[in-house]
Every structure is written in C-alpha cells, then in structure tokens.
Image 1 (cartoon, rainbow, N blue to C red):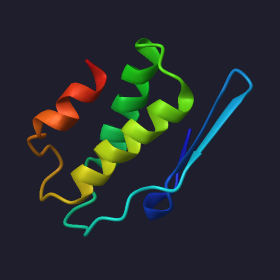
Image 2 (cartoon, rainbow, N blue to C red; image 1 turned 45 degrees about the vertical axis):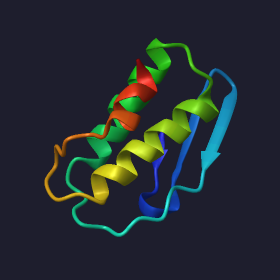
Image 3 (tube, rainbow, N blue to C red; image 1 turned 90 degrees about the horizontal axis):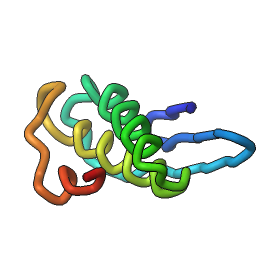
Image 4 (cartoon, one colour; image 1 turned 180 degrees about the horizontal axis):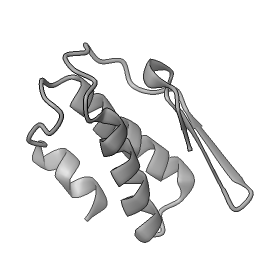
Length: 84
C-alpha cells in the first residue's frame, strides 16, 4: 500500500496491482485521512473485495475526510454503506 496524497494510491497484493488517481476535493484538513484510507483497505480485504474496488473506496473515504474539518468527521450514509 502506498498513499500519494492528492495523486491517489497504489495497492499491491498477491501479484495483483491497483493504481488510483485520487479524487479532487477542496482540502479542509488532512488529519485522519491516512487512518481512514487504511481502515477502508482493511475492511475491503476482510470483505474479500478486489483491489480496484478497495482502492476506489479507500480514496473516496480519505478524500471525504480531507474535505472536512477535524480527523473524525461524521460520514454521510453513502460512505458508511460502502463496506457493509
């Protein structure tokens, strides 16, 4: 796993590779974005999602966290439901 800030991320597991360009958002606060990204990756792996799907979800979540003030913003239902 390699996060690249506004340039997205790279995931590699069991010979599979996934690159994601990230999402453009207006940055309010980056605190908590890495933790949110990592949590989404772990949940995606536990749910046995493919790497591209995990990478997309993790980037969505981290981007949202960056667009909000504070490291633990309330998540909209759309984001909460991505990994259930």
